[in-house]
Image (cartoon, rainbow, N blue to C red):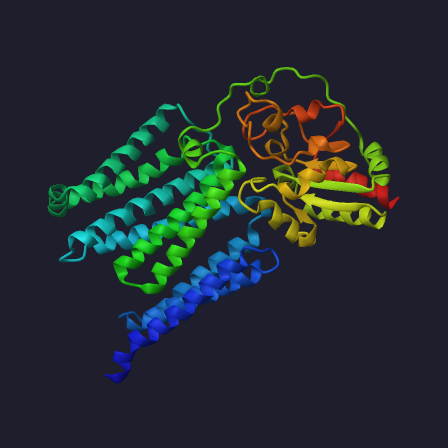
Length: 463
């Protein structure tokens, strides 16, 4: 009896300890050098919280351990099998299943007897946010994997958008109208209709948004999954779930704001407007001829360069070129060249995508620079090597007021003495805007697979 009465005390003490580990873990995720340790601390915190919660549940501990083992096995298999290029898609799915878990928790609580007005409001909020996060994340995954081509203006998208507004209207009625609440309480069928509409709402929320805005959308969905978890914690009166959900919700929202700021756009513009196409560069107007270069000529220029800036983009991820990029950087350093890496916040398919790829290749964190650190000294670089990046180095953002991306902070590689652009073709980036950088006098285009092109330059250095 004494042990049973002390269980809540033990649980709250462990919850406090887990919350501290969560806070430390998230703080460590802010730096590449401590990110792995931060991830490990957060995982330990969650494991402790789950195990101590089972003390007050009428569930066999073996059942919980088996479930943890199955989940850990599936997660480990995914982590081992997934390619670095698919990390953004995996993160989108993680966000979605986090939202789905909260969705099911809220659904189960609605079926509890004697549910009051406050609990119903929290249930409705959790169901709405969790359901929207789940289905929205599935669409984000599909867009990142280029499996979903539907966008703004299609009939199906418009139907899902209607579902989004209808579900939002139902939610508002519950929050402000007690009569509707009582009606809902006496009509379970209406609640199941609401469940269905919340799933459709996520489709209508994300489908109209372009692929170029998916990094921001992933951050926002991550925030929403945390908010849903915090509301689920309120329903279950679980302190650690409230704390963990609040941390994820707040950090995800901060990151969303940072990402939007890096694109010089508001969150509302990203979610409900998207890129406009109103300039000559957007329409693909002829801007001159490009100047191709081969690996031998690129080597001769790099061999004599005293400073080189490497700017990676999604093309590097697709080509899995990060290891040969690091090798090229090391060979140039051995040749006496000062080598740095320019990292734009929205390069790739998710926040920190390029940092993760270069960290995997063991590129020193000290060599990674952000645009505000690079741009003032850009004219001192002998060569800027752009590997598959497009919109984040597009000079239209600074030179063409009519461009859809005008005002977006970029890495101003066009101010370097020489620019190498490694691309497979002349296709535009996610924003659908042609890049005048390709046609500038100081730009040379090295066409082909980025990994093969850089490997060719590496071979020249070794020979």
